[in-house]
Length: 335
Image (tube, rainbow, N blue to C red; front, side, top):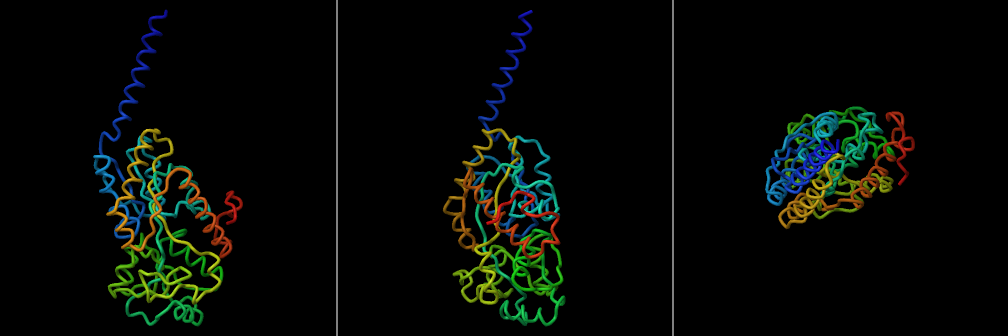
């Protein structure tokens, strides 16, 4: 009677040893990286600039695929439904922290494991180069006199442009037509073609177009001028009361399924921390108008909690009726 038991135990221990050996050699094959926004946007640019450094450290290939749509829901849902083995990464932005508030999905980053919060971007309100507006104050005055006339580029409920609009409407009134795109890149293309009048964008996505004279910066969503766009006024010049929501900006991170083996999580965290800290990627972030964060573990979670608190409550105070629930009902504390 004992022989079968001993054999079964030996097989089980052997299987565990093989699994441990496989994890010790992680990664053994290519890794799939899903970018939850479209090509040419800030998340896409950051992901494609960082990934080669990670590939070198891990000695593997990370195959990047854009899965845009649903304010990033499609890409995140795809990764969450893959095997929890460390071979499917999500390159995401801030949007999932608002999914439950907006009624877009029943999951957030709390349902994944944070590998690294890479960095945070600044926000600029941009317009076509031939726009009749030279500042956000000019645009706001026109919008007051012509409600519903201006076309604002957006990326869907909970996206960066719509969140900035919510902050503005929390302290003023900006009545515009919202034209939705699959990310920063398509929105910029539409603006270059004169199909929309303005769009709040990450400086990472729009900075070069503004400095090159193809777009015009109307305001940076800060309390002071910034070195990267010295001639663009801070939004507080037009809206002093919006200072209570600042500083604020989009961020980019890397995530895996929460049930990924600890050994794979640790390997990924170490690799991304080293890659983000590399001189070449730090130079990229600086030229891109972004701030390096390079957070994992408890520090990453504290950052996510703080960002969610500030943003969710500002959206609630701006337009509570448009939300599916309240920050309080979701257990999100006031900032």
